[in-house]
Length: 468
Image (cartoon, rainbow, N blue to C red; front, side, top):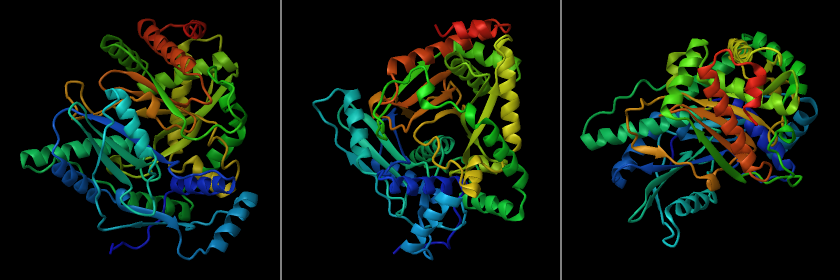
């Protein structure tokens, strides 16, 4: 029998996602596995299965979010659930505690070994294994909410990591893999792993609700409410993208593909230096480039799309595996007669303003007011950033693979990464978007970055022309 802690609150983002799923269920959508994420990693050396299982067990023991179970609150009957959802859909009444989260002290660990189809080549075999794993969605009511499967034959050494975005974000995913690698190597050497203090998702959620209850978040909530009302008409929708194609009225969730554009080492260094000289991050620079691409095809003077960034206020939070990255709407004004640097600085200003109000996410505004809760769920443009955590000289034991035919994507997402060199990865629903058009846009974005690195006085018109 599993022994559990007392009930702990879910975060605002968890509450938002769970409510979305419930409302989608009412529309007849199968939401099983909708929040699941799978990553396939090549293993650089031979792996000891028992030792990997021990390392995974230590990782799960370390992070409460991986030992949590999510469900409707025990005090809510099925009738309460239906009444609440109907009321929420009409009036946006927010009742904290509808969903519960229990953290288990001990969880059963199941490290699986998946068979490889010997008739397929290596890449096709890995993609098929990932798709087979996807056919078994994670059960969020039963921890652990992470599943690792080894893929082994005479040629292939790889593993599939299945996890849920309801319990951790993309940044936390990188932390999780890095720590798993560190623990595994320490076990090999018979030493203790060198890990920093682990922040608790439980602490994060409690602090979030505490600030909410004290009214500390009211200023931030008012800001996001004004931001949403003023700029909702500028949000880029799926049909407006330059690579959108005619698709079924209800494109299926999970029809995912990916495309990658990677810069050379020399170009990566030059782009990073150009961003530093402009006093912005590479994330800000590429966000401005994406804004340029969207302006070129839409023509609005204000471009807004969703941005995911870390909502962690203390250094300890940087080691937290939990749903802490928040979604924000960050509008950017464009002056077509100015310079490209003007767009970069405008993005920087809008991001700084967003960070000043990051203590409460836009999700909480939706939960409080019930406005447009499902808007953007199946028609959204997102820009994400994964910070560099490994020096280029270091060789990772687990190397993530890009498998275009085994990527689950709700709609459209671009991520910029900087390990070991700058790259852009687009994940998208191939029923809604043309892959060649996505690739052409990524290539154009990288051309703008390289041009800006060599010419800081690049005009906005010149940056737009580089997409042709």
